Length: 189
Image (tube, rainbow, N blue to C red; front, side, top):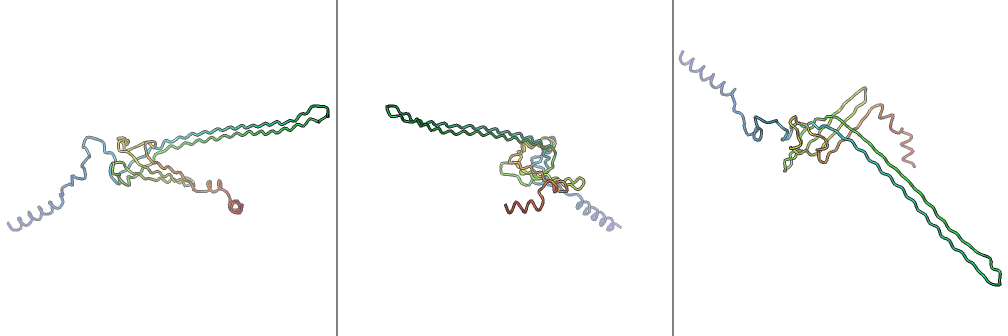
């Protein structure tokens, strides 16, 4: 009986030892128990708060003028006719361009890599389909860890080299584009 109890005790210790494993504390280096857990490694999630508004305006006005006069006069006993030549040129041009755009939203991205200086390269995409219309929003860029807030969000204007693309496909986008015949005629002319 003692051998049986000793065998069971050894079996229990072996099973317990395999179930309890030590944690690799190196994975938590740089993470405090008392501070927020901000993204700083490959695979971490960062939410980009897209708040973009662009306004552009360009006005141009050009005026040009030219006036040349050439005349001949003669006097004396011989009756000479008067000769006059006039040249004139006038040009006026004006142009105006105005462009406005606004984009707002939240997109979760993933840290693809960490640069040597600690900045994070992020990349993410969100696809939304409503009534057969698909809208894909993509964002990528470089984020400084100090710009990441405690809830792992960062404003889009703090993303360096940001690329924000919004693409759509579906019935509405097909109707808005030129038809097949128009595309063919544009190729010819």
